[in-house]
Image (cartoon, rainbow, N blue to C red):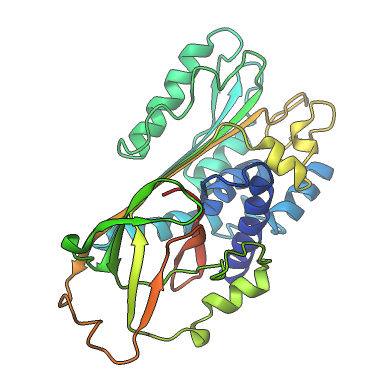
Length: 346
């Protein structure tokens, strides 16, 4: 699945850069894997220029076809299941595809999506019963995320003119392999931010992209990211780490403008969208893409170290994350990026 890993990383950086244009001094958090999973279902039924544009933005030639399952979505689900089985993390993800009742899905499309993606697209009455549609979507997302994400779709999120709505929600609740000592959690200043935040000490690996002089204008490329996370470029090092407690909530009420800016335009345009693999007769475009990602990582860990163990190691590194930083949460074996975030205010 190297191709999926590469597509995931490139897509992640593209989306992050586009979001950051309008959020220059704010926290950013999203799941590139969750978004790709949701878009794959549309890509499956896109045709012509709509498909070509999605291919370029998603950095994938194809996701699956009915006759030959390339295993992308099943691979994603297996990956999330594997992560959740560990003692360190819990990941819950839910995706949904909802079309206005006037656009019934092609039977072949429904069969393929259920077979390959374990997802059941639904028709809802956006035009005639908007609140009922919102309630149904939220109930499904809450159920599939085990209650971690509630009220994904806000009262103002949908309109009666919506034709096709995609939703994706993913939560991550993690603990460290080596626990931070709670008696060392203390208030410390976070540069560029006026408030005092809770910091903790322990061991881990964090990608810090800001220099000590506060320069945040470091260009991040796929090649550079690949070099950073490649096993031969890493080594185990004793570290005294100062890191804020991380509780992030990334809510994106509509990502269509972000994806359109990256080049995926036709699929959102009623006069140009070609989703003829999804419905017959045309007239269907993607109206909304709603995405939410949540993160909670606290001091707890599955193993404990002696309080002064790291301090007793000669020439240990001191890594103090006391200023804005960019981070990735990825699956070590596959290099799949699950989450991308930038913290300006912990």
